[in-house]
Length: 271
Image 1: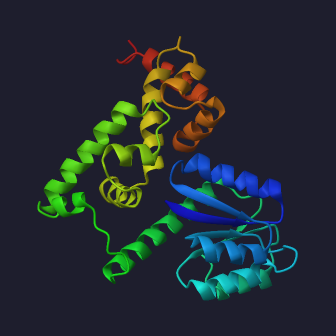
Image 2: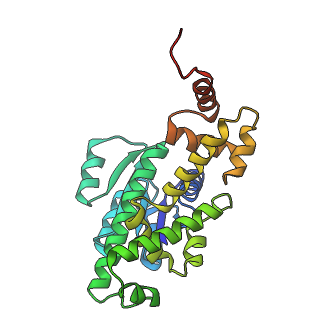
Image 3: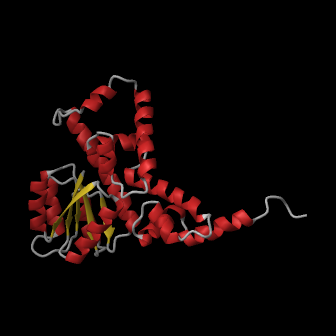
């Protein structure tokens, strides 16, 4: 579970960003909110956040000063500035506190997703490093058992087990925590092995699988697109359309037209 702090003096902006994070990374994050720099520092200190999304212009202590204090408390956390001000001095200060990214409002969904994926990777690496230094001593029984087998066998067995489970439940409101629990793994360990075996995050893999299933269904001209959305696990058809277009470059309707045209096209040449 990645702990994310959103600091912005605009309540609506905080709510929108939080909703986007929960949509793209369901079950993977715990989000905290602050309305100014001082509150951001206090929450960060008490909640030990992995990632900070912070605005610059806020009343009282601004985001730059708050970020500098946060960096002093934790040299490894990922700081992402999200601001409406595209000014060189701000960008220069962002560099000085070793910010991961400097995004302009309104945040592009794809840019936000990509930078958060990178922040998750950094958080995973930090946890791995802490474990190796003896900071985190906990080791699950499954990890010990896996250590008795060769790496190649372990990867094949575990990956196939996860793949079968997701294939049998992708139509449901499935979260990373659901699969981790079914596999008897902790959330953190499941995230680690999933990225290693599948070379992508859980939510990306799940979306790709659902969209592939949807593409096959769309080749049936009589099937309703809204029904297809529900059948592959999306309760919101608008969100389904957004994900489908992001992964294929086309809306479901456009994809259906192209697919049906290909099916109707004669396989042989003209006589």
